[in-house]
Image (tube, rainbow, N blue to C red):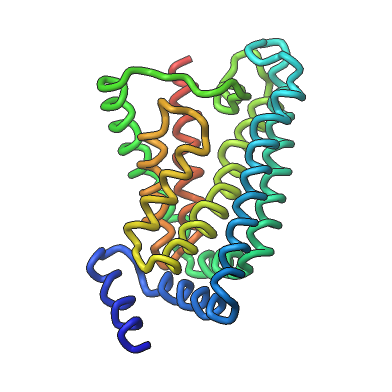
Length: 268
């Protein structure tokens, strides 16, 4: 037991980005996991991931497209589509909370502790700015190397929020969906649940960052955005590793999404 503890203490210092607060969370998770068999833990994680994937696809793609009733690409129903997007995103957020909290109730506790640090907003804005710069550099490089490749057809909240045909209601609904609800639910699962679980299982921060970031990127079903989204995932994981924890990652994600809206608005 002493040897295992020593390795856990050395590895984060070598990577130089995982702070003591995150170690405390990982130790709590590790202690909880040792109380049940490995098979039970695997079943819980797989069950939670399957439920999240179902909610992600159903409420993120299938339901919005069905409710749009063929109106994707139309400009006359911008308000309707924005409300549909916000509604589905909110339900998806609640489903994500239920799934994650049922499997690991430490996630919500860690989020509360992160806000209590008082630095969540400052840390989040700083990491969000880094994500904005890095993502655009990666986007430019990947476009030159691989060209553009479209993802699957879905409601684009950024386009709705910046559409000239939408009023205040459409802009507000789409902006809330993109900059408040989506960052919270995505960080709650990808960094609050998956990232921490991978650290507990592998003992490697680098592996946890890599896998959680790639899953985050691929889950958006947009091949052209995978490199930049994976890069953002890495930055958000660094934000999660600060004393501010999950709230810093949520704020960083919100800042990045807001930058996309601003960029779209300026371009139009």
